[in-house]
Length: 278
Image (tube, rainbow, N blue to C red; front, side):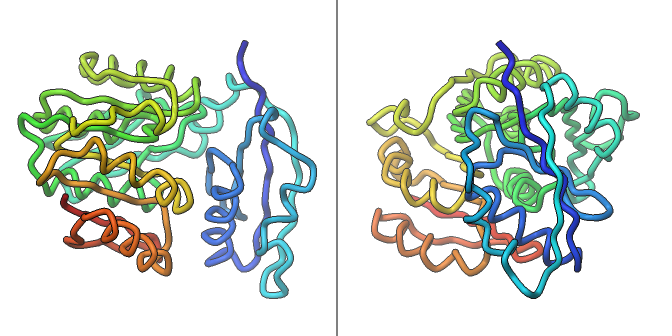
């Protein structure tokens, strides 16, 4: 059975940084997907995951610095494509990688990824996904075994495969993301990528991967970091994103305690992506 989602239409004044802060807090609270609009953001959460009082945890809604109004409605997943066709514009990362929908024209770049995101997160538009795409473009993946943790649309897994990764596993806790990832993999000629339903508990307990990519959120990263390290080979790379600049210190501390060495990080609109080596 297809899940039912609740769509919240938030009207935010001032738009920035209000929308940015709101998306971060909603993500921590369990909202899965976001579409930025001219007046704010559309935010989506599964009806089964919604509990009364959840929005009381969103601090910005009680801030005197912002005026935020919202309405809500239940939607079926099939409506998601209509939303993306209205709002999804193609992106180009460093003149090297284009991410577009099937209804967009082709781009003349070395790497082109065609994504139909539906209810999945990860089109490249969000700062975290954009920076992770940059990291993949800048680093060698030839012949490596790669894990995309919290794969969403699998856009990161697909680019890793296009860059020569020998084996790629993709994992997401949401069955709709798994289904969407399989569709996008086949659409981009990357059907050899293996996709699994689950969380970090399904990861192998022995060093397996040369590279791990995890674009999730601060709390999940901190909770599951030891499980990532357990399956990362010595000398392997770990790319993390999904958190703010002010979270970088606690992320570094957690990684240092697990024998991970900081290499570098990127910043975009106060979001951060970071590279560690084991």
